[in-house]
Length: 408
Ligand code: ADE
Image 1: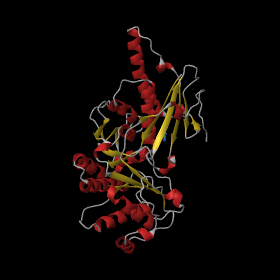
Image 2: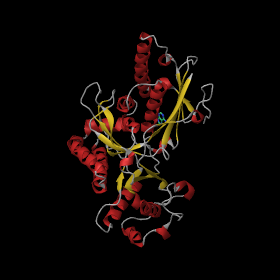
Image 3: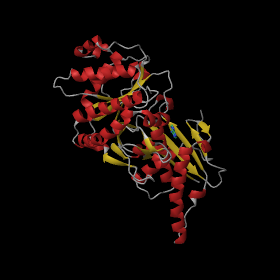
Image 4: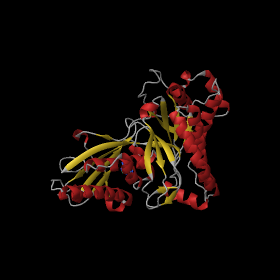
């Protein structure tokens, strides 16, 4: 029996992935680019053990056993990693070297997200990245990260970007077999450590359209999507340049424009897809007001939204205190302990609340009302950080019998 435990981070795209040219292999219609967020704040943790005594593959997700045979995307990742392991085993056998035939053993997979899976925080990206990275360590695969990213892509498209830290591009590739559709690191997390993020978890009663279904409807019905596909290549180049130059002005404007264009093609889909709600739009307005008030005219923060109402605000470190105070003023939470934990100590011991809001910023109330308590349920302050990590045996989610230590 061999057991490995790893964590993988969430990534939030600044040039969005939306649309597949091949739905089976998960090949996108455009390149995308994301920032990897710290695993200390948000992560998926996965333990996998392989043993010849197991009766079959089993999966526990967030403490509950799931039918692994129904999970086609996960199966793609098993098939691909087992095939590489099998090739290694065959080579070792041919050379007369002893090797454990792990590729033939059933596996037990136990995975947990340290955030609510339903909160719309890219859990399939971190989850499938953790799965593929853990399988690669379990099977001791010789593959590099970009090769693993091609496998993770077949589990969940954006998972390929969670295999790297820092700033990561997913190159769409041209080949029909997907062999050149992979993630590459544009810059490591150490390149621009001043760039931070504030995840605003927006409450929403509605269950949105799944991205798998939504993006294919966009491809089939939106004339605006063809325009987007002309715009993205130039944006990718401009975004890489902005990141390499640590130019927040360009990074921020491109980020907001690309998020807005993504939501525009959603509205142009027929029937239309709505991911933003009144709270999401209120946060957009607030960020534009905040940028307008900037003394030197330079932007101070940028928002981006995925397939849901949550806002992610990117900003240089020096603006974060002000931004947290602003959001807490205009979008107050119900339970202050749950609402914001000052992990990085930006408030310097001060409490959240209007007394701490700079007077200039209360004037936004003319255009932005103070929203109902609870419309933002939680603020997570995080930053760009590293790729997947291997944990020690004591962090295993499975016990000696290969069963979950904890169940829901
Ligand atoms: N989907 C959402 N979270 C996941 C996880 N942790 N592992 C696998 N798939 C997931």
